[in-house]
Length: 164
Image 1 (tube, rainbow, N blue to C red):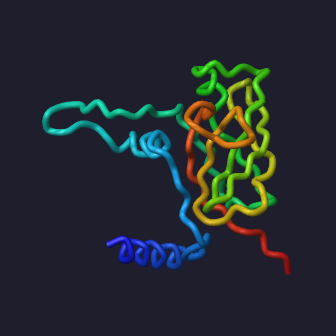
Image 2 (image 1 turned 120 degrees about the vertical axis):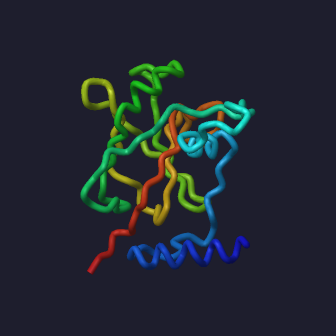
């Protein structure tokens, strides 16, 4: 079944003009990261709300853009991300990184606070990410984990800048 799903996904990506499989390896996410992404789709079951043994991180929402995100070129603004991170004790003095996770790569980039202390901004998506990229905000530039993630993950589609 996994092989069939992988082929279907690659056909859909190719049909959308994206690289069918931009990375040699899939991106591993932990239970809380998957729960955070899935939570908006979980309402309840026939017996009522179900308490799951996972904790969701604050939401990380990239602002819509009319352009593709390009590694090494594009910026990205996460709407309300600083406000959301404050729920976990983050202050203006806390150094926060957007960690771009692409395949097995984890590339941290410092973020800055913008828009009346509400949003976080990444001035340039790091070179090396491509395809479906997960982004978490963390107060660690070494390795994001449940102990230091302050928001996310979000999903971006990043293309590689081509030089002609």
